[in-house]
Length: 382
Image 1: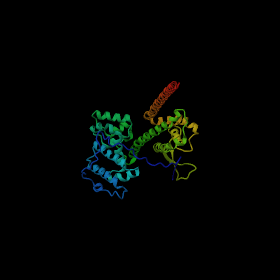
Image 2 (image 1 turned 180 degrees about the vertical axis):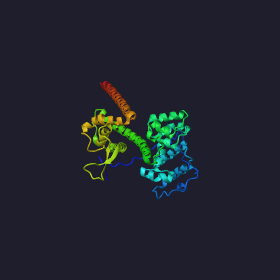
Image 3 (image 1 turned 90 degrees about the horizontal axis):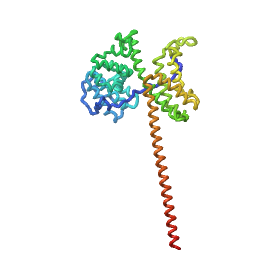
Image 4 (image 1 turned 90 degrees about the vertical axis):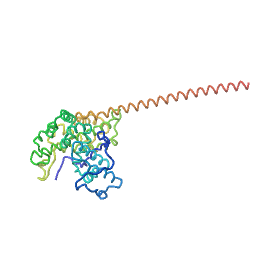
């Protein structure tokens, strides 16, 4: 029996989708290819009907399967090629469950392996040529794909200097000193456990940064009416923020909280997952996310704008560090769009004003002409 301070069931996020057309300047081959020799697991066409695949998608999936079989030994370039195929599969299937069900029969990969390839393809594409030239191994690429930008730059500098970017060198760049002994996540003992934790941390931190940036950007968009002096409509703004907030809160919990015996007042079989301390910025952030992710916990409508601006946004910016600058660019984008809309509205108003002026001039001219004609007619009658 396991208890947490708050229980929320969160579905696993689907992998991000990428445009496979931008394959380092190489378009993904969509024509059927001759399959290379493959293992028994993929030598025959899968039973797509039993997997619930409709006939319209079978040709696409078969093409991916044959392309996967045609790939040779796992070079640096092949890691990117496999990542392109994983991304293509993610774009064909409707959801994460379908992806997990198909990745093995179509690409011959485990879910975890496929996600590693996809991560390399999505995040390291701009550096592909340098990494291929350096002959960087797949295991190093997996770590580099979830590294901070400054760590990526440091790793690329190693390659450009003609030095080997080994796993040990990559761990040193990332500051993962516990894995320098050469222990692998598959190993047992304390060293293996540390290696597994380091692997989880690398993947988990990347997800937290990505989801945190998306949430901050979403909140900044929500605050646009408040920046213009209007009140935020809670019923329209709250619902889209609830699930992303709960997901981010749960991800932070899995990385920073610890399972402990419940203690006094509970049965011996009860386990609580608790923060290491409740007196630091991480717990303050967790409290804010707990409030932001609850329908009944938001402040009164008139206080939502100040609360999001003065509490929520600064804490998310603290979480993201330098990455917050990119999310904050959405405010500049909204300002440019608002300025463009204002200029367009001003142009429309000026055009309507000019048209009214012309209409008045035409009416005045027509009235004068009518009076002149009437005077002439009176002269003729006289």
